[in-house]
Image 1 (cartoon, helix red, strand yellow):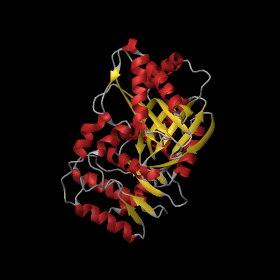
Image 2 (spheres, helix red, strand yellow):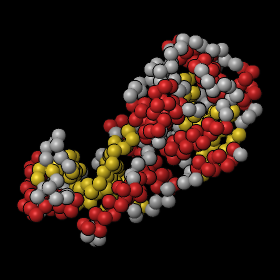
Image 3 (cartoon, one colour):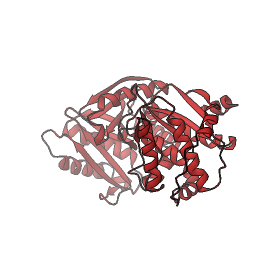
Image 4 (tube, one colour):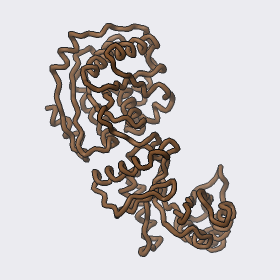
Length: 387
């Protein structure tokens, strides 16, 4: 997500560059897995901009990239980068795919972005017309050195540079990056009539739910807790996840499961109880927050078997996730919970507690439905609704 410093730095440079007569475009680079799903990504971009109240003139393709003409490129970029299916997002200036025009624009933008004595790297990718991208890189680098000699800036290498001056070429245009940010990967969220159900009840389950969305599944979220003191932490995690569902209004269902929060055995009983609650819903797919890196194969096999017995299809989005688990944790603001996560991922038990139907029946009676209008006050809205 684009930070406040990013916004301030961009605004300062934007004033400095003095390009009032030129338009800044937001360029979205789909992941390799999204290139055959660009139409869905465009739909999601339009939705997220509307949800975040960001005005835009158009969202369209230019070759393999998506071009967004937004009233405020900085905040539009921040909104779009909540989505999955994006490799990189950049705020750019557009010129024609012409050798001299590109060199001139890279020199102008690069000269204003560079600080005194910085090492820079000119990187150009995409579709060149009548010239090699390498020749364009050399020409732009030489031009910056010559015209901005007072800066004392000098070329870096692929392994060692302070600033990357990146340009992407399409058939007719070149997009010179002013700022860029890494995307969240995955594929575009594609809600269908038959949604997958997932439960959020701790850090691992929140990451599993995030991965479910990242893999493109339409997702219905339920929330389970043992005691009210857990609700604040759960609400904060939910707040980071629901904007990625690309919906203005989200309906969450909360269930209290009264189980002692201490001990591995009680935790496994808790997980089993949550699975039993998920199986009460009509959804064909059930997303399980289980990973072979955390739970025993016997416990996972037992859960899968139970799902199949109910004639539903289990998903295990964490099956191929290893150290990425902690990257996803940071993505939803769980940096401070790293120690807790480390403790959770070292569960060492082959116990397979029975599914406690009586306990689940009691928990189902605690159901509370909370409707959330996606916005800045989600955490307080959720907690107030539960009161």
